[in-house]
Image 1: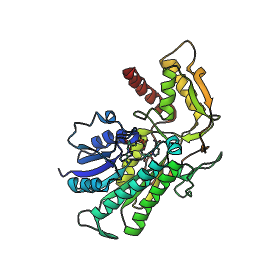
Image 2: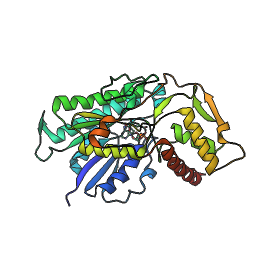
Image 3: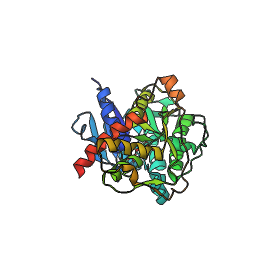
Length: 340
Ligand code: NAD
């Protein structure tokens, strides 16, 4: 069987490490090359289930390192890119924005420019055999800014990023857009809402709530806890990426969201309720919930209109928040038991 070699970036992180096992199992003719710098956010333990697969190769390195990226394209004859790698934590982007611009903007530029040079002879002319090569950029709904009490982000919503993180992701989306319009590259972009599920870094909201509760520490909730996000179970996101990578229209953007708007306080309460059942203590975990000073520039509400991917590609979220969070908590109970 002729193998198709796909470069996936940043797959030692949360979403990529859920995506790789799913994708390898579904497509037996794919070989995935994972380029990841292994920053604090990357962990190869997330990929133990594929580490011995002959259809999976790990390369440690920086997406900004052009020589390295060029050598990967050459060594493996890369015919597709799914680009997850990013600095992804908004709080870190407030403290240290520079690395976000470097990785998210310059890194995306390096990857797509090397892909262009490897796949195309000149604008709108592909090299023979590379006509189907696609660059899929993974992005976020945060590029659209914040919403009031009503309304949803569609693919037509104007960009209005508010944090250094979302601004750097918006910049990377624009570079990908430009390579489609200027050079005729086969690109797709997916803008997804907040993910949750197994393998997410401890610093993020849901693992923090679970960890703090289990260790009987205060559960910190920003501001009044009323910030709303549209929560999507990570495997549903992976299935959406798979569909868009294979069936999306070149040059287009697809929003992915679970139609599961929940505020932070609801999330903390729900997790505590489930823990009260699975790991009961004398008092409810809810008593640990504490309000802390709000994040600077904290966006109030994000919510995705997923009509396009639902109607054009037949995607639908399989989990709602209540079913997905139960699976997630069970996974973290196991993780934190092993680490204890
Ligand atoms: P993550 O922070 O868990 O993982 C990022 C990975 O990228 C890590 O393995 C890290 O080592 C790697 N990386 C960072 N800088 C790198 C560099 N310079 N070169 C190579 N590798 C590098 O992130 P995630 O939550 O898995 O997010 C993946 C993608 O999805 C990101 O592009 C993010 O913007 C996007 N996204 C995430 C969410 C979410 O809720 N987590 C929602 C929408 C979109």
